[in-house]
Image (tube, rainbow, N blue to C red; front, side, top):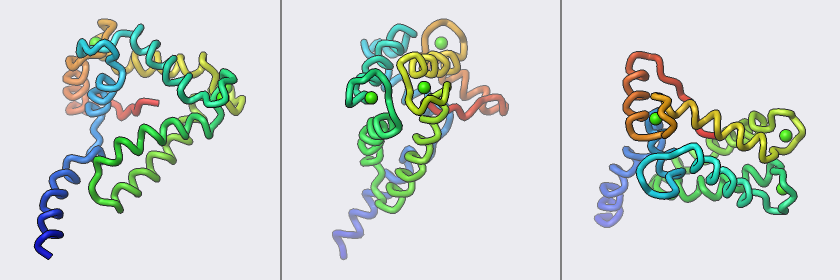
Length: 166
Ligand SMILES: [Ca+2]
Ligand SMILES: [Ca+2]
Ligand SMILES: [Ca+2]
């Protein structure tokens, strides 16, 4: 009994700080964490493009140059599981997983802009560039922590958006 109680006490703050509390500004922080390849704390468009290219190649399991749904969703699921492992509550984890996987399928259809049933590199890149431009709030060509602060201020005034990285 004593053991399970102390585990609960340990787990609780983790749940509170979980990615479930997903603010728009949080997505810029995640974006920088994931896309800042040279570790200088900001993301350039060139970095974004390089990262997108690697991501695409990783997902393209049969290496035919396009991503079908199972490839796109599968690659996302791998990264998602890693993130979700930080959520202590198994119920919450499952709920979040189902929600995120539903969104991944929706994103697949959005990314497949010509509705060919597969995402090609052009489509994948275009969505990355669009995402970059939206995150770069001050339009200086880099996504930085300053953009996160700007977004936070805009959100407070009701001008921010809930754009989620595809
Ligand atoms: Ca493929
Ligand atoms: Ca397509
Ligand atoms: Ca910027």
